[in-house]
Every structure is written in structure tokens, then in C-alpha cells.
Amino acid sequence: MKRIKKGDEVIILTGKSKGGRGNVSKVLGDKVIVDGMNLVKKHVKPNPNANEQGGIKEKAMPIHLSNVALYNPKTQKAGRIGFKFIESEEGVQIKQRYFKSDGELVDIQ
Image 1 (cartoon, rainbow, N blue to C red):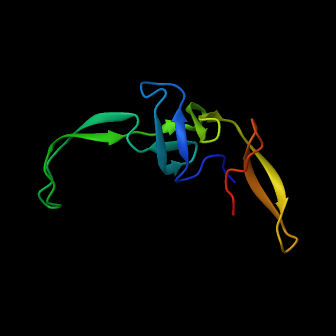
Image 2: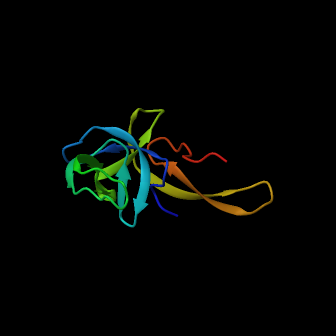
């Protein structure tokens, strides 16, 4: 289980988008793409076969996992993540993510 998943709300800790908050749209190994953060301008050639226009387009680039932290809505700060095993109704152990600062579970199922 990963500490940061697709759909999580994260805070950028370093770089040009420092302090920005956004949702993770894609996880690429040890990097994530955050919506609206770490944008670069990309020069694109026109492709008549795919009916694409050329020009300068903005694109979100990946950010390393060490440079983002999960947003804790209770404290309204970046939070460190830990794992603990919770017993379900069926008596099965389930691995859950929790915030180390206040012990609050991230994924309540």
C-alpha cells in the first residue's frame, strides 16, 4: 500500500509550486502528477493525422513523492502518514493509513 494514492489531496513542500494544494491525478512509481501544479510550457508540433494544432501548451509535470505531503483537513496542514492494522467486522485485519499527528484514519471505509 502506498502512502499517497490517486485522488488524495496533497500539499507541495518544495519547488516553484511550494505551498500549493491539489489532487493527485496520476501516480507514476515514485512520482505523482498533481492537478494544476508544477506546470510547464511545452512547444508542440502540429499533427494533421491526429487533427492536433501546434503551439505552446501548458502541461503538468511529475513531482517526486518526497516533495509532497498528504493534506490533513482537521489540522489544515501537511501530515505524515503511518500504517496500522484495523480489525474489520468479519475479523479480518485490514491495513489502513493514518495521520501520525492526531491518529485520524485517512481512508474511512
